[in-house]
Length: 437
Ligand code: PLP
Image (cartoon, rainbow, N blue to C red):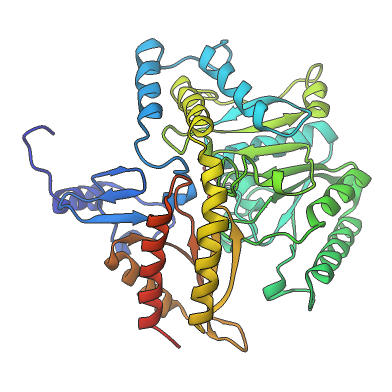
């Protein structure tokens, strides 16, 4: 566009005329125009800047336009821009090797997909082929993607207009603040959620259940930290009934929690791990399934009936290699852990003391939820109109927030600085003050 001045208005009109958007009624859209971004900042064509507290869809973990990742994509484009999945490709091998290096002990191979949904789709396929069973259990409080099985595995209401795949059964996960089990302590909630899961398995027939798919820390559903012992308990139940345990690390993985994988923070070893988003910060679409030895060995002499034209696309793979290397060299995961512990946690505790409308804060690393309530005693979720006003207020201040239901999720890139967090928290403080209950 050298020499040609692009305006917000032109880009907006172009979008509204030709682009069909996700999860929307097309006539009610008002997309934000973004011209460029760097680190944790974005801007439009008129020079308005935004501090990113969303990482877009919680995926730009390494921040925008990381020079090493951009350069790696450029270099791979010059070397070999595309190649079929059946070929052996250097970038693909290097990407898989690095992912395995960060996975728990005993994980052997990586199957590459294009994003989170098809990663879950293929993990479900592996579980079904491996067990010869068909049903898939997953949590009501979850999002697993929008393809055939992934959207039916999803627990949240985006599932309902999409229920074409069969054999999906849901259960309740622990969530003490809004307990389905009338629990008063984390221990009770954990014990009761595990007892409920066992009942669901008994009533669905263990011999019919292929896999159990669970976000290690449910993300969009509210960053619901599992109580100590829950994930281990789920693993024990899966082992007892020969059910393949799949942990979805699409949102929680690759630095978000201040660990390489969220499961590193718990005493749990699943059979399959799915990933996408943070693995290369979404610079080129990619996802995949990390496969344990048991399942990897099974497929040494059993056919795997699945594949994708762009599985392990070289541009995406080069971006993975460069992202993981840069995250190691620049201690990005350590930064996320430090920011969570030393900056976000204390600041949210202060905000909670000050604002009666903050019902609960929870999270770790750069993965936090602030739950807003209209009535602190009854814990009534804050009404939708006020949530819309709060979101608009934050954007108006110059922040890009992630708002889901009655919650603000604090999910900046993992490279965020303490100063940037202070600034964003100050915006939140000001806007909550304006809408105080
Ligand atoms: N799984 C989880 C936990 C997610 O948060 C998401 C997306 O938000 C997905 C799966 C689906 O990923 P994608 O949109 O890349 O298909």
